[in-house]
Image 1: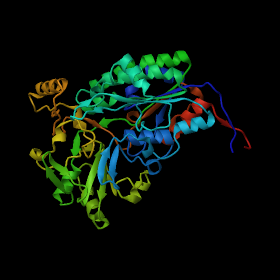
Image 2: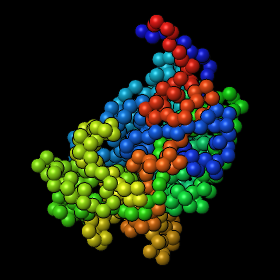
Image 3: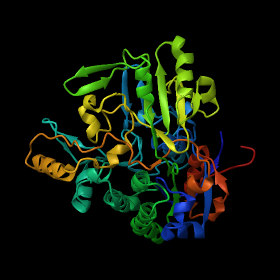
Image 4: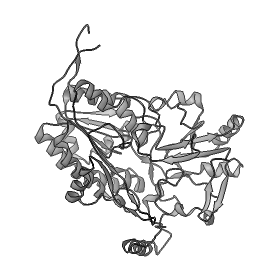
Length: 468
């Protein structure tokens, strides 16, 4: 067995600044200061370059074929249901970063502030968004914490978790400010603190990565992070800031499911809420996830036909069968029988209805759990509805007095979306980046699979004795 030497007392802060790229760092002077005392490096990502998959690779050092997180969601074959944004850490296979750290430093304390798959993780402290769902159907902003007492401590200090600024048409810097505030409260008592800061996702998808709004979003994140980075500097805590992906300009929505339906392969059923995707009877359907779509094909005899159909769709760059998935480390049983990769300026919708009059009621709302795919249109109020703001205000008033409500304000036309991600980056300036305060670990580039061991080494100063 290897004999490990380590230096007790080292502390590490790891901040996942989603969407941060070398290009956006130009607008982030406080973050750049971290790299000026240490280093800044290119960072590889994985396919699909989406939050759940990449974070799982950062924390396990494994590719999706091994940790099993093939996207932000997938078709659960054993349940016959599509689920996105599950939260249980048991879904992620592999030895996690905190397992490695504790093997080297027994008793090391770990905090997870809003990284995904937080619930059930074997860490000392957890904070993660978790709405309260009332018996009358109302949803209230809230968070889940471990230990439970932390919930009331944080909400007393920071207010309730601002769920409606964490995602949706009103997504803003306020949710990132709350998360940073929580991290500042928790960090002093922990050896490893993981923090997820989502703000760059919003305006880069709304307006594109080259927009003035994107530059302003980077400045806003930098200012929000500054107090946390100052706390870390004053306490001698090492810092790593990294990103999962870069967002690229994309304005071409691709309706894979509508094509499959027109070909008689995708089936729906009807109820009082509209048309619903029927995964039990469909011969083929897609779970859309930004620039990646997992296509599940019930009968292997249909595979060749479905692959040919997908290859002919405008906006599709690659169609990966199981053999093609091997090259990207995506060949896991949860993955689609075929995985479709978009062209750089394209992205995949989840839409499966052929007439907007038949769209399900949740299509016009922010509903990340009912939609069988990712919907970036949730970042917008419907620009075609002149009364949308008034209706939104009226709905909030109904909520305030305890009445049932449906927030039907999201457009069914995805045209406003101007940025996306998921495919591997074509240009390092618009890809992920890693910024580290410790120059001793300097390299020009790290792969996503190397991040776990980099972080563990920064925290434990581990070295293996020769001949052990």
